[in-house]
Length: 492
Image 1 (spheres, rainbow, N blue to C red):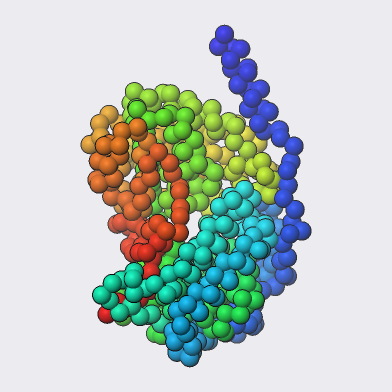
Image 2 (cartoon, rainbow, N blue to C red):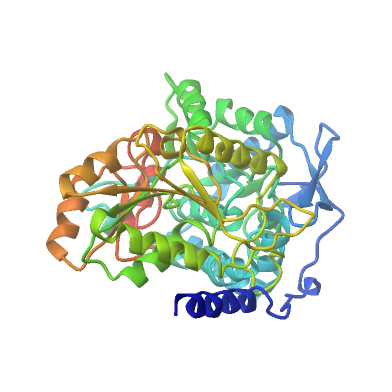
């Protein structure tokens, strides 16, 4: 009987891996051979005269050349933003500002297919994620904050909300368009102007957003988008005429930014690393929880700072959960991100793949048991099989350090107090998940887990109306929702 069941399961898995390709067409996207800097409402060549290549991580093919901004370019962008702020943006009636933001949201919707294709080609994430989550959520952030522009007095009663001035914004490679929207929309809604730098290896959708901003007739200089690597970001952080820094990225860089702005009047919002705990109690809906775990760490290649990379399972259901997780891993399709069947796309860069592989070796050396799905991966490009580690100790590096890949560590617990202590025993505190059918248990954990966001019986759910941010080395400040307005305002 067991042999028949296993054969049936194998056939099911083999079938899952052999869907006919359902490729999204690249023809929806126009990618220029070279992109310049977007400063003061137009594209212009970098003063450095340098460009760097951006590649498709799934094929290793070159997509385009991107301008490499130096300190002089940053200074020019900041001056354009300051002039736009003083000349018209902060003086413009709030309802008029809202119309511009609303127009940008509509134009993102109109170009949604193109943006999704470019996001997948440049970043490696599955087209389903780009199409169904990244692009719609980016548009929704602009829609949401467009509605706040003329209601700031109601948002902060008894205060006199005024814009800070020029915001310097630096975003990561895992959600390029969404992070740009996450940063730009509240800054514009509160009357600030912007200098934004996308990650050097995923700049294309931010530059497409620059095209949309230009077509929306946003006044020149209100949003400036400049590209480059770490030195470009450092020039933004250190520029004396920047009033606010908004950064999403690694904890190490966040600490450098904190030191750089210490003693200045610059405000900062830092959304940094994470090592999220996902907790399954024995009274949880197990199948739903397993799917939530898969969604929380594997469907996004683990390329999410709030990914549920640490799983804690109550002892009595541990074997069942691990068995179902392994079974589910075998059905996942790793491959071409442009294929609508693909569950797990490409790792964003060779460097990140090397980091993931380094941690796989560390985990095995530490004595943890590694299980990888027996799935095919392309011979070219940067791909990693979904991986589970069991027999993990709380002190293991794979349970303490951010890996940023499709790697899940699993530990057990017996009591509520034990899992709370284990979940909080990390330098990070960005997010967590709780799976149980007891509301009292949910409320008990949400008050004791040191995480900025705690999801109950779900994971990785985002909405423009909800604030997001962390504790400890996961940063400080909140983005999204009403809370996301305050960091861009002097409240008097």
